[in-house]
Image 1 (cartoon, rainbow, N blue to C red):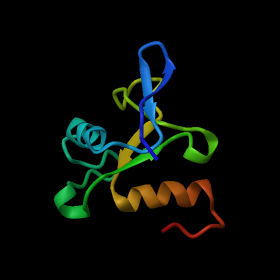
Image 2 (cartoon, rainbow, N blue to C red; image 1 turned 135 degrees about the vertical axis):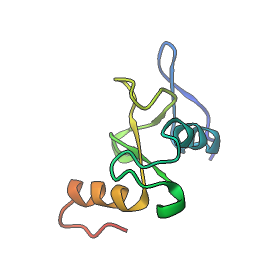
Image 3 (spheres, rainbow, N blue to C red; image 1 turned 180 degrees about the horizontal axis):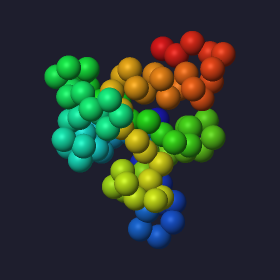
Length: 95
């Protein structure tokens, strides 16, 4: 499946699969530090992108700054990302 940019509204694009360049931009924006637990990537592994509106609900990886009101993305370490999903689905074990 080709991962083309999708126009959400004028000037706002998103992707179904997060491109590596976008992941790298998000990681750089937070200075390679998890905003929730404040651990560096060197302590907790590569940061992960979290979609606020899940992909199964049509959520895309938006090409906007993380703090933009229309951004659908957050970034977290693996542990914090897992806790987010555990809170969304308390009866489902997070991977």
